[in-house]
Amino acid sequence: MEYADEKIMKLLNKEQNDNGIDPGRGSVSKGYVKTTREIIRFSERELLNKKIKVHLPSVFEEMPNDLAALKYPSERRPNLILMSESTTINMAFNHTSTEIKEKDTSAFKDLMMEFIKKTNPSAEWFADGVKVVNGKSVGFFEVLLPAMDTSIYNFMFCVELEGKALMCTFNCTEEEMGDWQSIAEEIMNSFQIINEGATKNERNHHL
Image 1: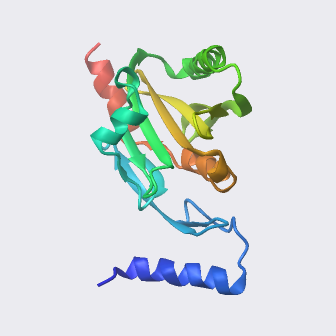
Image 2: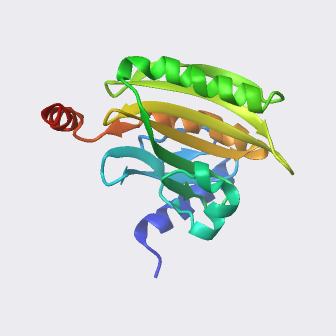
């Protein structure tokens, strides 16, 4: 038996096909986004031992270890990788050991960009900047990186979490970029740290 929400999404997809509904309507925070291909249902997810929450496609599942080993070198593998059913759309979270303060967010973002520019000189760059998201300073940038069979679009953002850098990376193929570029930014805008005040107090207590 189908779940009720799955039936609703199928009906919405049929409505889009039958009535020519324009893509781009809806939003991540509303719980659905219409692309040129489908209607994608979103839900708020608590991740990294409930340290953060963010709106992501409901169908995203954790990437199996064998596939993660192929896609990400072991020394740089993120703590958590979520993927679409097709495996071509991924969202990764890596709580690094790099100590930073919130005021260092912009400098850390610039360092990441410089590293990519040195290692991928043919990369195509889009927007970058720093903004406040739910009270937290977030550095971000967009880049298209060449791969073996296609280029990969990356929307990366970084934030201070418990005194260390958290790197969050959305990626998809260049062919899917048109549908997902604006959605990736919406995902960042939904990002929130859970119990930020309590975390800071606990950290100060141990100083």
